[in-house]
Amino acid sequence: MGILIPHYFSTYLLPFQDLSPMKLSKSTWQPFMIQAIRQAQIAASQGEIPVGALILDHSLNIISAQKNATRRLHDPSAHAEILAIRDACSKLKKKRLDNTTIIVTLEPCVMCAAAIAEAHCKRLVFGAYDTKAGAVIHGAQVFSMPHKPNVEIIGGIMEKENSLLIKSFFNPLRK
Ligand SMILES: [Zn+2]
Image 1 (cartoon, protein in one colour):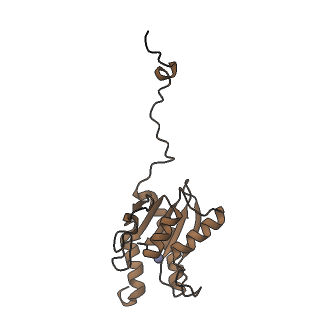
Image 2: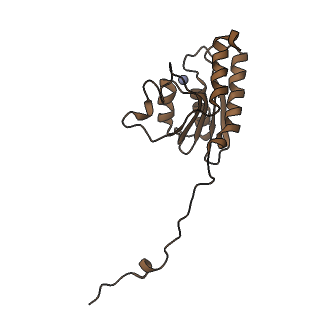
Image 3: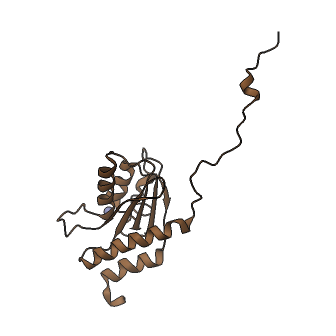
């Protein structure tokens, strides 16, 4: 007696489908980075270290746009990324930010990188590299630690502009 092969094995072989909503490239992030830079510039005008952050949903709609506010809020944890994560979670009424992208003008510090991991953001896009306080590519390399979620990391978007933004704040004579 031959082996019975269920009919559905031989029919319905679906063609490969690319289910991603759109093709993403480095240029995808530029307009968002420009908006994050605007946030950073507002921070600078308020005497804050110029760092801006956005959170985008799965369809790349902006859920939150925040800027560094440690002086204004008297809060050392009020970095742009932390404020954006809190704001986005609050708006979505969720404790995590699955399927979101966080855009930051500067490589996140160890506190913010850990918060991005805790929030389960899908993707981190940042501008300038921070060799001193950065903890993504540099320092603690938080996302390489064991048990951290898999976050896609894209660094160096508008790196020159972002690097100049932070440097000119700390050394205005070099403007
Ligand atoms: Zn930070």
